[in-house]
Length: 368
Image 1 (cartoon, rainbow, N blue to C red):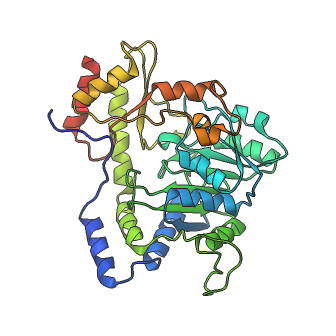
Image 2: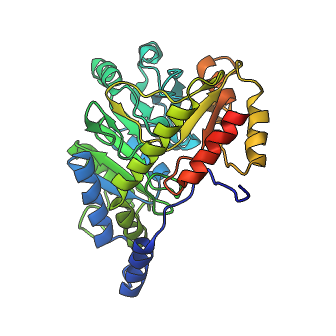
Image 3: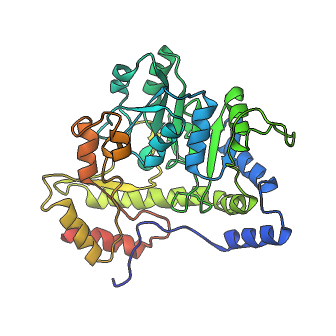
């Protein structure tokens, strides 16, 4: 197979192109009816009372942290094994990230280690649904209630996923999605916040638009940012939303075939799916352990020569990133996260990968 099989590729069709043209022709590009329609779609999907669209996933996280009342000097417990936006959003509030190591199976924060990290300065727990699978929210929420802490769900990678029959986006006190170009559904750049808490909704709504009071022009109630989504973005996302089930089912079908065909290869660990959860496979992430025949880097080079796109998410846990390590973190502080960063490898699972390409990827891995 000569052509490159990309690790990810946005699913753009005639519906998205039509939506963009219609919005351009309308002349109504900024936040408006399409954004409101998309917010309603998310409310119904997640079965929440409120949804607030933002211009990207990072601004959604920043807004959510503000909404629950995080202040400079506060501590927010989170995971070091995630995209940097999770932690940067904490720093943007002037707060301190306090890390807890991950569960080696799910790659999500290990609830059994959270309580030991709580201090009198702890003001929230920010959990991450990594690769498309929710964290263990029953355990996380139980601890949070004991200490009267709000829980924020970073659901950037988990739209359509479920945990004990509840949708991602309705598993914590407030949740954040990303609609970045490579996400399961996307609009190039975009974000969404969902919550059942009216106070959090009002705080987020103000923060999203320069602190402006809802439906009252030029009346402000504190500091805010320009985090609005445009109708142009929302139109693309709405077209994507209509295909959410189709996209999710295609990812699940590909993942099932990988699980069936790649099981039993020594040193190649397949994704773990926890009981009572639905994994939507934003990434199909395998682990290359010491039992594998070569190093991960040699395997990556081989796949590259075969035209198979791969990715490492993430090559370094965040406690080792310089501007975060200055909070006193060092190597060996979170050994499971550090080991995972040396072993994980994602292979193509997006809905535009053909059956022929999936068979080719499987054959290449098996023949290695």
